[in-house]
Length: 181
Image (cartoon, rainbow, N blue to C red; front, side):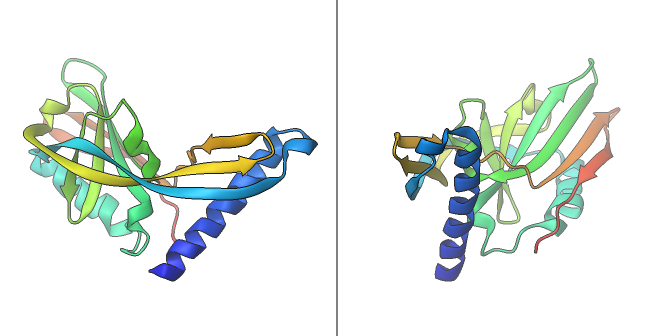
């Protein structure tokens, strides 16, 4: 686990350096240190009530899950959009855990030891709030440079699945799955 944390920090530091060198002038590109800070947030827990959605997530999303050593740094986000009166678009994406710190989040649910954050419109169509809160952990990144401390939020998306929901049925519309190295 320690080796993975060190490797994770080195990868993030490299990405941050590339990001900074593209965005700052030559005199500001010297990165003296990258701080990776583990932080937490309290979030309300919801329960996934729709069995068909749970089955789709298990068979189409979690079968491509990161191994358990890497799971803490990433989190799934479920974004629900109401298209028409009875039709919804649901996007599931694997993102860095910093998304837990977003005000757009409505809550979270757990499915087979994986955390999914809920965003969007009318989540009560698929989920029920439990009135419980839980502390969830995420990583924040601060770059120390000649300009001072610069917060950095990686927004790289690794894998995603797009579903439509109409007439009580889910349909996989598209997927982008990035395999592990």
